[in-house]
Structures are given as C-alpha cells and as structure tokens.
Figure 1 (cartoon, one colour):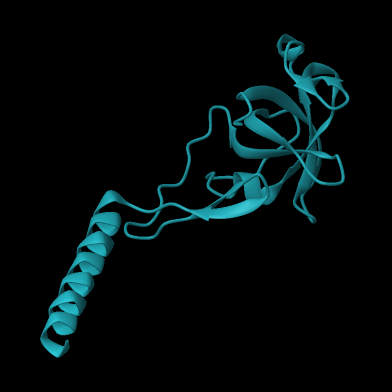
Figure 2 (cartoon, rainbow, N blue to C red):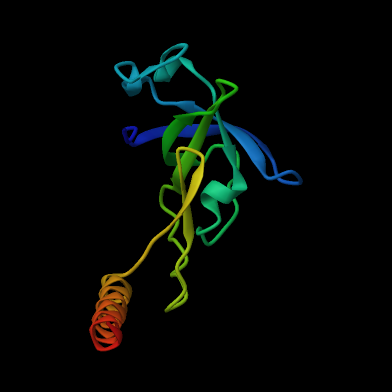
Length: 135
C-alpha cells in the first residue's frame, strides 16, 4: 500500500553523512504509523531520497515525502522533494531505480515492454516452426 504524501520541516541535517530528520506538519494527525499519528513522529531522511534535487537540503526546508516503516520499525522518508526547489531532469534514456518498500524497482518504458514482447513472440514462433519441421 502506498503511503500518503506528507509535508514537514527539516529540523536536523548532517551534510557530511547526508542524513537528517523531518518533523511532519501538524495537519498529518490522521496518518497512522506504528507509534501513533505521523504528526507526532520524527521521520529519518537520507540524501538518496533527494538526489534528484538541484541542491542539497538545508535546515528549515519544507519537504514533501512518503514514509515507509523499515524492518527495525524506523520511519524513513522516500520519494522526497524540497518544496520550491526544482528537480534535475533525468538524462534521456536513463531510467532510475526507485525504492518501494525497501526493494529497488526499475521503471520500464512502454516501448521497452513492447519490444520484449515482440522478441518473445518471434522466439516462440521460430521454435514452433522448428519443432514441427523436426517432428
């Protein structure tokens, strides 16, 4: 299940380590976590969740993010962005892996899927003709 998009303020940031803490806005009291309402929790954030942004985060930045609960019960921000800061455009033809529930997922374009299906269909057809010819 996809977590709702939350917003919060970056209250701690260690630029050397690329980690910090977000305090969610009070408006998120209806979003439940293992420890109670999201508005009462501190959410950890890693620089990798913001690597597509034009600049590194700074204390006081408003961050939009989703949360996930890790196996050790820590709340982690992912799919994060800094409000008011533009994102870097991805290089054309290069797909980024996106972490979903702790598992890296590679996005695949529709053209790639169709070309793979066409290749599979061609292999099955060739195999079928070969089988009929030999037997």
